[in-house]
Amino acid sequence: MELIPTALLGTIIILLLILIIRSFTNQKDYELRDHLNTNFNQFTDRMDSRLTEQNERNTNFEKETNHNLINFQEKLVRFQQEQFKELRDTLENRLNRMDEKVNISLEQGFEKTNKTFTNIAERLSKIDEAQKKIDSLSIEIVSLQDVLTDKKTRGTFGEVQLNQILYSIFGEKNDSIYQTQYNFGNSRADAVLFAPEPLGTIAIDSKFPLENYRKMIDQSSTELERSIASKQFVQDCKIHIDDIARKYIIPTITSDQALMFVPAEAVFATINAYHQEIIDYAQRKRVWLVSPTTLMSTLTTIQTILINLEREKYAAVIHEQLRSLGTEFQRYSERWDKLSNRLEGVNKDIKDLHITTSKITKRFDSIASTEASTLENSEQ
Image (cartoon, rainbow, N blue to C red; front, side):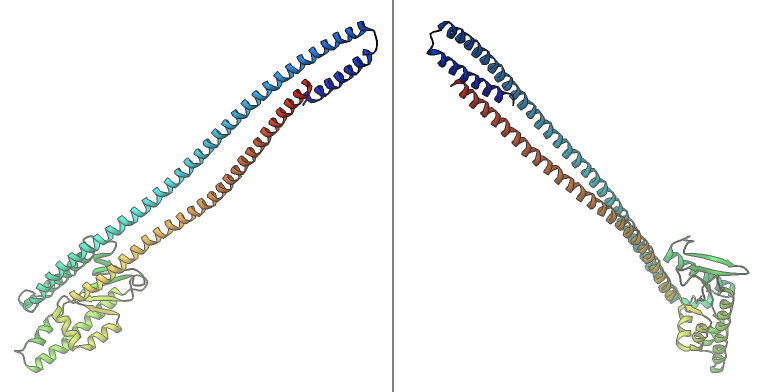
């Protein structure tokens, strides 16, 4: 910017000196003209020297400016590459962590589901085995009069069969679902079932009214004897029902209902086929009569309910994890939007820098061309 005024000043001075020299050509004072010529030559030499120095300084300045501009562009490119690499690494790490969490949650859920179905399959196989054993027992139930000679033996038989059914459905020593020989203060039930609400704790007691049943079905007896035995059989069943209702339906402790387990399918079938008054009486007392087959069906239904509840619990856990994952993904989306906005701002700044760089380059070119034009005019 200092070169242009200096060049103009030199040109003006040269023109003035030329005018002065021409004004003195008509004079005869050649010594003065020689002196002026000498001074003019010295002046032009000094101007040439200054112009040369100025050109060298301008050339060096241009080189240094271009060198600095190239360094600046290289540093800017390296900075951009480092920033993008850092952002890419950060995003990849976060996505990898999210993928790991999702995979862990899904693997745990699938593992628990597989275990549940495996347990169901194993227990169904146990149920089939138990059903085969019970079927074989039901065939021989008619001949029990030769084996079950007293009440104690019949009671033991009923308890063993009840325990076997519970083992086959729920597995052995599964105290969280059922217990055998469970004490309620002064009374002890053969078994209790800890069913989910609203059922609650349900007592199961085995009763085997066999004596009058045998008399009732004995075809060698008279009609009167069978009729008396039938009435006594009904009375025996009602006594058993009252006993269960009094001992094992306890407010705030047990459910409002209990189960009377009849170990013999034939006895149970006779009650349902010919003694509706026993069924009605049991319903009024909230005592449900079950045989081995119906008890297994009831327990299997309860087992299915327990499995569904357990599955729903795991489903709730998975749902909670998915909800948490959705929250994390929403947070990730918001942060990605912010990052995108920042990247757009960086791109805009880079474009602005390119525009500014282009303007500076054009300005340098314009200055260089102006200097060249000025030098040409000064040489003329």
